[in-house]
Image 1: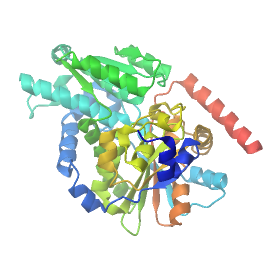
Image 2: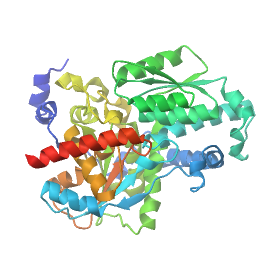
Image 3: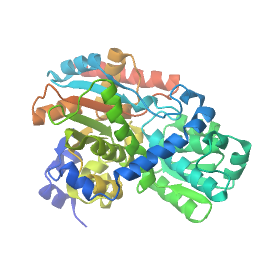
Image 4: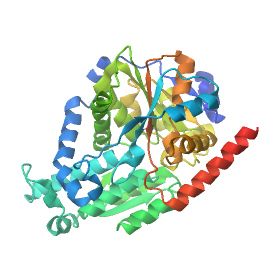
Length: 439
């Protein structure tokens, strides 16, 4: 067992992590994209297969979820420059950002309103498709809107799905599974917000609550599935299907940026800041981004200072063999979707050659960003959505200013938060920001 003292001696930056300091860690082991991709277990063909499956299900989404009709069953979010927030941040940090700041609004994805919508929904529909095809009820050349019927709901009711979650993954899996007709159980940690639990129960989902953290919720979900051959456990720590569902977003981003006239190449780099919990969502997106842009994109995981599990795992190369509690952190943060103490070993090992680095952000900063963003852009987002917001300023400080770079903050969570909870968040954010200004 490696001691805390040994870790600090070998990796001095861990002392800053243990002290809950906001840090930027640059990955010196990053490889050229071509080299990293050539040795990866997953390929562009795997991501193309995932995209094709999502297209097959588009007619089903249109019929079952009216909010997707406008996008023709396409589960995607917009990208927009946020110049007013950039100006507010320039004043906050007392420095002029030279590149352009933009945001990817996964906070408002249809169906479940977070980055988890793609991966969670994708794994469920892949499982549903496999069951339906094997039974002969469905054929690949048919219109998949037929899945929104009593015949298929009765069929899927013979099967169950289980998952452990801090909140947003549980929402995406619970909503789509219940709509298809599966019996679904979401094992939720103490960090999950009550409104998310209540919303799932309203959708017909069985929610089991734990006083402990994310790891126990996942363990209990795994145990439940192991005893039931008709139960499919969605493993946020190790699932390649979740990972591929997320990766589709990275590939799609290329077309979105082209539509907006945003150039990405070696002379016009793209820096992407991804909120990170256990790692599946941001890892999958980063993998897709590398497939799309190669070395022209630089990807960073962003985590709360109380829960920097992926940062800790990547720095030490211990991945899931080390937890934030091992360096004295409590894994308690208002960014509930990011409250994870032990990272996915699968994602950490796959993604280390691709990642440019990691950054950490305090809860106080998250609330400052929430207040500033609401004031500047008029949009509410959850605390976790702001994890990557300081990234552009940290990166420019380390790497120097680059006037033709695009800095993309990947937002997650916020679009489904009930109004009373929004007001509570915003009042707290305004109070913390006001106190900071007085200092």
